[in-house]
Each structure stands twice: as C-alpha cells, then as structure tokens.
Image 1: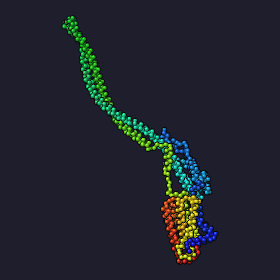
Image 2: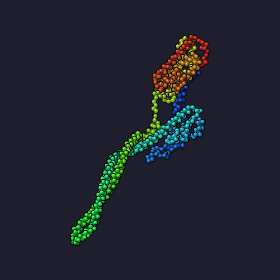
Image 3: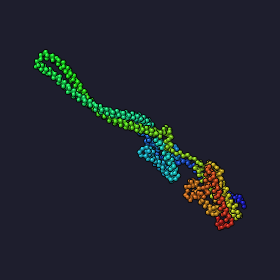
Length: 617
C-alpha cells in the first residue's frame, strides 16, 4: 500500500458521513475563525479611541497673565491687566482633538460616572491650574497638577490609556506654557538689547567726553607745571626784591636822617640870621661906625641873608622829598616783603595745583579707559543678544519649548495594530488548527502498521494528511488576512510559504508526540502550545520574559514562525527569514525522524499500551 493510497483512505474515512464532513470542515476552519476573528476585533483599536468615554472636569479659576516687556522710563516690568485660563484652553484643545469621547462634567458627576462605568477614567484640572502655570514668574513657583482617576473594575487597560492621555496632556501644556514663557523671555531680552544699544550710545558719548577731558587735563597739567615753575621763580625774585627794597629803605632812611639834620642846621642858621644882623649892627655901633657905614655893611650882608633864606627853603623842600623817598622806600620794602610772602603762597598753591592736575590727568585717563571698556562691554552685550523680530521670537520660543523633534523612520513597518499582531496569531492559529485536526485524524493507521513494515511510508502518510489539511487552513487564513482584513504583504508568496511550512512542522511535532505518547502526547501538544504562546514574543519583546522562558524562546518553533512572518510581511531582513525557515525545516525533519523511530518500534514490537484505545481520537 502506497502513501497516496493511505492518505486517500484516511480522507475517505473522515468524509464517510455527513457529520464527519461537518466536523472536518469545522476543524479546518478553526484557525481561520480564531486568527481572523481575533485580528478583526483588534485590527485597529486606536482608531476607535474617540468612542471611549472620558469625563473631563475643569475647575480652573484662571490667573493674571504674566506681563511682558520693560517700561523704558522706569526699567520695571509693568503689571499685567489681562487674565488667562489655561484649564479652558486645555479642555477646548482636548475636545477638538477628539482623541477620546471627552465629556465635560462636574466633579460629582464624574465620580458617579466612573463608579457606574459610564466613563473609563476621569481627568480633573484643579482650580489653581493657571495660577500654578504662571507661578514661575513670581516668588512662589510650583508645579501645576492634572488629576487622573481610574477604575480597574471597568477596564484595566483604561488605566494605561488614561496615564498615556494625561502624559500627552502634560507634555502639550508644558510645550504651550513653555512657548509663552520663552517668548516673554525673548521679548524681555529684545527690550534689554534695545536698552543696551542706548546705553552703548551713551557710553560712546561718555568715552568721547572722557577722552576730551583726559586730553584737557593733560594740557592743564602742563600749564600748572609751568605755573608752578613760574610762581617758584616769582617767589625767589620777590624774596630778592624784598631784600633789595629793604636795603634801599635802610639807605633812604639814613639819607633822610642826614637830610633832616642838615635841614635842621640850615633852618637854625636861617632863623638865627636876624639876630646875627642885629648883633652885628650893635657891634658896629659900638665900634663907632656911622649909620651909612653900617648900612653899607648890612647892604652887603642882606643879599647873603636872602640867599640863605632861599637856600634854607630849598633845603627844607629837599629834606621833605628825601623824607617822602624814605617813607616810600619803607613802604616799598614792606610791600616787597608782603609780595615775597604772597609769591611763596602762590608758589605753594601752584605746586599743589600741579599735583592735583597730575592726579586729575591720571584719573581722567583711567576714566577714559574704563568708559572705553564699558562701551566695548555694552557693545559685546548687544552682539551677544541677537536682533529679533516678533515672528522670529515666536519661532525661537516654540523651539525652546519643544526643542526635540522626533524623526521616526522604520526599517520595516506594520500598517496598524492588527497587522502588528498578525504574525503571532497566524502562527498560533496554525498550531491550533493542526492540534484540532489531530482530534479526528488518526496519527498512524494501525491497519498500515499491521499490513506494512515500512516506517517511512507509514510516517509520511500519517504526516501528509494533516499537513495537507493544514495547508488548506493556512490558505484560507491567508485569504482572510489579505482580502477580508486588507492586510498588505511585502512578500505574500514567501509569507504563505512560511505558513505552509509552519503548519507542516507543527503536524510533524504533534504526530511524533502522538506516536510516542498517544493521548498523553496529544495533551502535551496543548501544553507545548501554552509554552509557545508565552515565549514566542508575539506581543511584548521576548527580552522582557523571565530568564527560563527567554531561553525557551530560542528553542521552540513558534517564535521562529512569528519572526519569519514579520520579516516577509513587513519587508524586513530576508536573511533572518531564511534562517527562521531553516530552523522550522530542522524541527520538521527532526520530528519526522522521531516519529519514524516510534513507528519502527510499533512495527517490530507491540505492547499492551499499543492495544489500549486512546483517550483522544
């Protein structure tokens, strides 16, 4: 009996009755229903999030808007005259965004709705929300709060969805508030830059004035140095003049004293002249001279007396002038002394003025250097703050608030959530489909074992029957995935080929379990499915598994099926898919060899266990 005949005989047995045909069709459809319905239900759950009811409670009282700009007259930030309510803004954005079915409620209404299950979670924006968001500009900065309340009794995943939603709200609010704060900061910097420009202009003028003053002070210092030298010379000359004037005064005083003495003598002589004339007359009378003789003598003497009187007058005049000269010389000597004292004071003052002018020159030079540094520093400050426009500041603020833009690219891409799960559930469906087929398909024909002694043909016949039915299952599942659910495949034939090989490999494994262990092997096929369900890495990455299960991931075949389908379906690494395919073939060959060994044992040696009816099938 040949292998095709044994396969045909098994198929005739399975379709020998109407109920058999129904059972066979039902079991063939198991993976189609399992994989198709599950993936249909989970094809794109994210697109249905707008249907998820969420309570939104807004209690925000608002707050004064932070002021912007600087008053140029006072240099202070003016008080704000407007208010903001970030809570209402957030609520409007959430409702317009339609990420969930946001329903505005009061706090009591939201609590009742969450408890009753009419909403999946609640988000509350508290009364001090805007106050907290604007507090960074004041002396009591503190964080704003967004309150999330969930009820795992409604749906556990709703809690994760709520956490993700609140985090997205938090990041969007942080970006919005950060953008406004950054724009206020940039506006303030722009005002500071304008003030620095004005200060730079003033510093430039101050520098020019300081340089002019420094130059003038240098000239002043030169002049005061000359003044100090001249006044020192003047003081020395005045001292010399005072000494000479004193000598002149002393000489004039001696001359005046002599003149006074001579004048006194002449005056006495002039005053004694009448008495001498009288005495002379009396003497001539006593000598007996006649009056004529006396008159002649007196006539000769009288001109002399006249000249004496004239001389006396001249002498007295000269003495007076000499006295005036002496007095004048004394005054000159006194004035020269005073001049010498004043010249010394002036010289001392001029020396002090020269020292002060030098200090002024040095100070103004330092001032000029300092103002130049101030001017350069202010100019550097202006250069350090780039010029901006309102539009540029808005772009800068947006960049500061959200500095990182994620550029996402995919080496291989699944179109949606359902497509992401398709490899895992298709592989799992292949195992379930083969497992179900072995509920009605006989692993090994006992008639063939009795009639034939060819383990290879018996094993191939026992394997090919479920393998061909499994191929029909995979073809039907592929049609559901591609046509009904609309999933796209980068390599559709390669994907279908992996599904065929996977189904055939699973048939070989379950066949070997049945050959060696009978109904216990069938049960172990269920256990093996559970192990592969948790180790295949179909949902979370396999690296998240505990170490023993992670080790099984590298051994059991389902993970290789999932990986191969991902590479072929999403357009990934074909070399990896080839390696996965090779591992599956190795499993299939190994299982068939193990089954042949078991069949060989059965054809050469029968045991009481072999004669007992199986609990399954």
